[in-house]
View 1 (cartoon, rainbow, N blue to C red):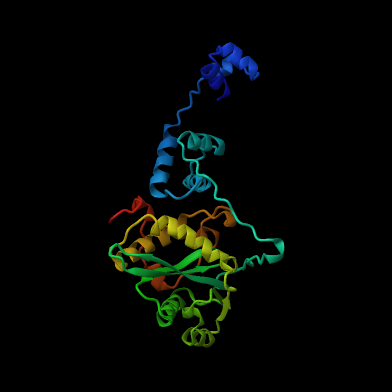
View 2 (cartoon, rainbow, N blue to C red):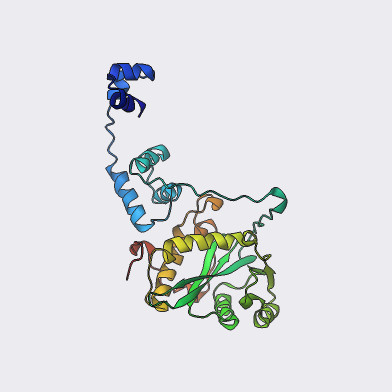
Length: 287
């Protein structure tokens, strides 16, 4: 605060310092009687469970729990705890090069699909296939495997076909798994139109790229994995938490399933769900 700076730096009296900044002495000596211990405890819990998220995400999660603390009060405590994260500088394309993604109006209109990669603690690399519904940003699949040929991709799509049906379009990049004859033949048989992003333009597949970022921060950067089986357990718990509780700004801070619930087949209704927050997302945690 400026008054504190003047008092310490120039050895000025409090009366002189407050007069310089046009502030009353009563305001300087006033001490708030608000007890913010509950907010501190709640924010500490949020940071422990979701260390890569920011203030807005924490605020809307708190509101979803029915707690009516004011935005400005939570923000004040958040800043006092030193939790403010530096905003990443964004790169904006010129208007002539922008190709915004169209917002679809129902489930199974367009899906987005992409691969990610990571490594086990023994050095073996593995790949992750993420599939999402563009309508409500729901993560339909997040599975890891040492290798992911086109036939394995097709097997997972067949599994999703039994659970939630198939979309009219699937948007991907130009990877060999998505340009193979096996994949194209499967799309033709199932009346699915493959849509490919232009090489070097990941923004044309922006929905899945945004999901990938959250997934990397919450899972890949938070844990070290001893096996693919262990990874898939953590990934499945994250997927349930993301779909049920993650507030999306583009969805008016609703979670994917809250924004638009999907009618699942009986197989999916019987699937047991676990709370991802039960896993402590500490950096490089061994389970």
